[in-house]
Length: 465
Image (cartoon, rainbow, N blue to C red; front, side, top):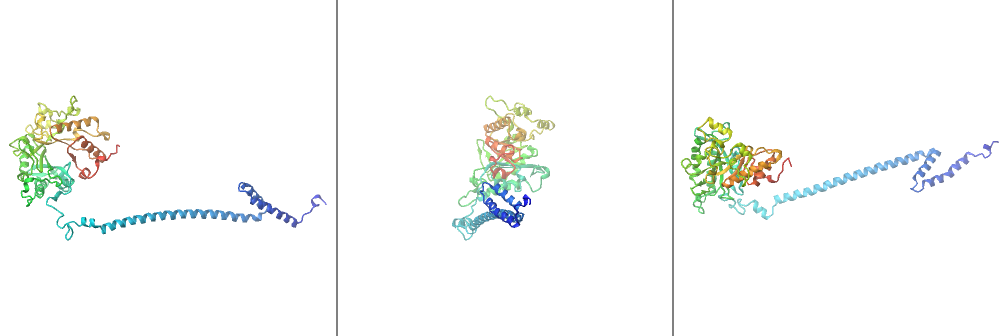
């Protein structure tokens, strides 16, 4: 018998031997967590030795992955529920707020019930909610000029509602009638100086100056259009669009309804008497006719002087370069002071020296002839006198021009005004407005009434900031 057959082992013995090794493997399974690799090696060895246990571990792995997936799903559902709960909570708070506001609106407290129904029939204050001069109640006048006011959907009244203390009307003399419009193409038979401005102003001032037992002489006190500041005069700037010398007497006549009621500001030879309406002629208005006792006997039409010619520096400061280049310096020869296009027109029409444009028609040789006795405004085109605002900011030279213009106007007792201001971008427009007001411009020329009077444009910045 061979050596291999000396200790034969039966199948039962082999099975018993494998069975006796099971506890060792189970002990490996219970080993410390710090040695996980030994456990897996033991399990791997057991799988090699006992292929019949492999389905069992596959089931264990499947259960493990299933539990992990289930855990992730539970976490995801918890997040969704938390988010939905938060949204519902916020929605309930918002709903409570809205209901509270509605409760206040529909069920007001005592003081709100009184103020909301004040003056109504059957309530406290019945018949006390209005007074004779409440036409402009609550409107505070501000120093702005409604440029091209006749273009607005509601001329004159829109400007007053916004608080503007100055309005503008472009007037054309055609067949002995004064029409209002920006160009000949825009004129209509019913849009006249009387229908758009003179007659409405008469009606407004009659309401502001009623004759009652408390105020028996209604036209004596002369309250203006603004109930909050009754002494504030409203300036009617009339832009002469046709020949100034031909148009002047018609304008003088058209103002008679206001003049006869004592509504027009005038000068009496020694002082200017302030009244609810101040009329200023611009465009082709001849200065010589404004000063004439014969042409302007009541002295109730004032002049819009040329602001560009009034530049003044501090003692020793050089004349503004722009003024030198444009020859807008008054001297003995008035022709030298006219812009090139005006001088050329004068050469073609030697008898039309009163039609040279704003501030230049019938102009005096001496710039100091413009005073508060004959003029109210001193105006100039911003685009022509100051130029474009490059890079979103006025240059030092431009600021020097602005300050010199304002200084010269104020020394003569006149109000400085720039027209043709930049209007876009809005930030650039607001920047220019802010600078002009801070530098002392007296009247802000505006097209956008809401932008000038109802928004805090001074604090805005533009695209360059």
